[in-house]
Length: 269
Image (cartoon, rainbow, N blue to C red; front, top):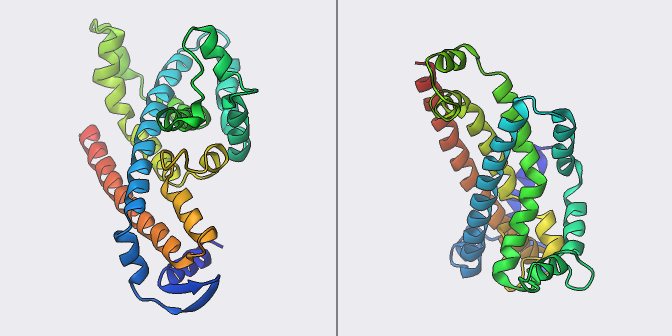
């Protein structure tokens, strides 16, 4: 179930297609065309920017929320349930909900900004605001994943070093940066790596919200390869894009795992 589509896709990246039919081997022509495709590099840059912004915000929010909940605040159980609800909604449904919220005629975003005297942003109509809008949707949906992983890490930390630091007179900020954060670093790295891998392939929300527009402001590799395959019927070139992205993600993952092992060794020593 996992290997056959992968092998089929890699094979397709070395073949040429005409009107949806395989017309034979193309060698590395698809990869050469991708490497010389300016739109591909633009989409790759947009993907990198999207992933960097989304994962960074999700990590910071997830860490902050986990620190609040782990202290057993009042109604923390209800807060925890409320925080994980967005993650349980299908990505396509999330895209539809937020598209309605962003809509200039029936949405709630424009009236909200207008009531604050900030005008009507028409989020999905402008390149800058559209990018911010799709990042906000990703943050809303996937911050709960980071929150759950980090919360589990916080609850599993040894308490002796933290208690000893408090007895020595260290304040909450000092305890966090000197003890909690170093002990939590392996958990944070696992959470970030998992989210990075998933965020690179984001398609559902982008397709429902903007289809990569306006222009190419929100066009990621996933949407560009989709358009290349199903709008222009260049299946081989589309698969070459996906395979190239897969290799890049694999290299980044290997580097992150090595960094995690080094950090774990330093922490244990």
